[in-house]
Length: 279
Image (cartoon, rainbow, N blue to C red; front, side, top):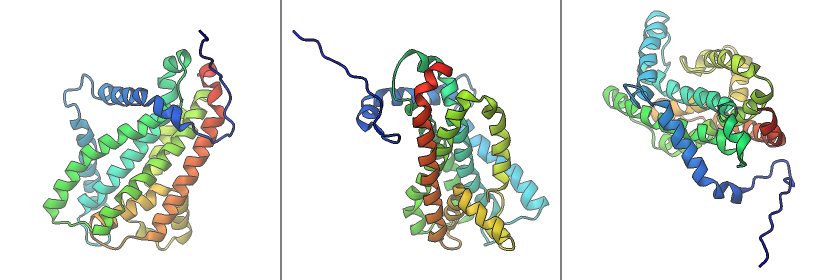
């Protein structure tokens, strides 16, 4: 009786993804995703309430500082707390996914060194588990919209998958790039928190993007280089019912999210064969 023969061959193309192999390892993906969720809230008194507590308390503090003290408002009549909360939800998903994906390969070093599996699974779980936190936090947003009498546009609900897709692609693309760099250069874990802190202030989280109308160059750079800016702006327009969805900006966000994802995936795929040796 002949024994089965296994042939291990390098990928033929730099960006090729073996979808059949990824599907075979779907159980590992689910196990890692469930592990990330359970470990995150393990031995915490509040459990998943932390997913709501953090953006809600941040919204209260930021409303007092930026709305009451600095007189920043939504610019379109939308109550500032719900205007701010939409921005915080998307920003916290983006920054959390970027941070967790960037550190994912280091956090799973022992697993990567011992067994083979598609490395792409590890950072991909970060994007997935972040969506669960986002869904839990959105419960408060629904309550706030009812309280303030805010009704979403139908088009806002219809474009919600596209907005979430932009957020996932841009965060995962940057996360793949930084995860690869973090394996070789541990400076990434020190620079990333500073980078994210700065990024929040160059993203229209606490202010409307129209405040930059007098600075067209800055506004243009923000919308082109920072896809999450267009996501937040259109999410507010669509979900809060004030203003209209800017499909031009949405198209820019989609395009740049795909570009970031392709660049991150390219670098990740071109360096992943060294991960087990140097992680």
